[in-house]
Length: 212
Image (tube, rainbow, N blue to C red; front, side, top):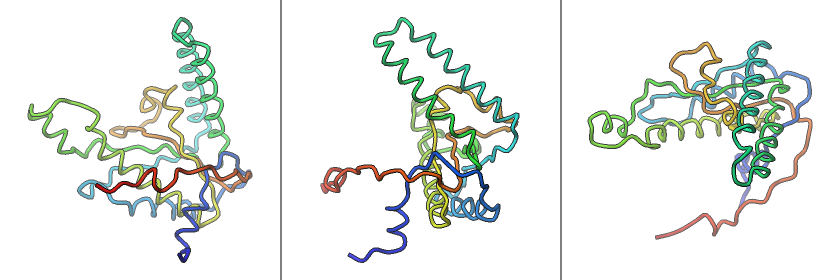
């Protein structure tokens, strides 16, 4: 089978958590966002938003909110079953999230509240119960947009890493951001790689493919 340039990008992409101090050109970041914008979305609603975090004060607020969230979690799990294991998990997730504040480029990625899915319309009409499906459509749109962002960055020689762990500690990040109508779904870092992680093992094709 012939390996195409797209194959090489997909197979070569890795999550990068350590970067050089150099900031990528603004034009490159714009190209990555433009690639993300080409992703399909429900009824072409284009609900995904990229909020670049440049303010040191805002980064510090986020960091403090994460620290406060960690302390609250550690206090809450003191008497929980398997509290030692949970404590280790909480500390590990916090520790492995802090690198985002050192990244040359940091985005919060969210979705607007203007899109109303069919599930939501049925709920409002009293025909369905409210459930996790309310956010399913826009969450898929976020994933597709991030894929375009990541692959364009890979093509340009940049590395990135998607983080959802900070949202374990910051339950309502929207309070920190001076935005209305945007729900934060994750963070993403970008920069010139300063590490070469090993390729992780992927599942075998037959483990994920089925015919019925």
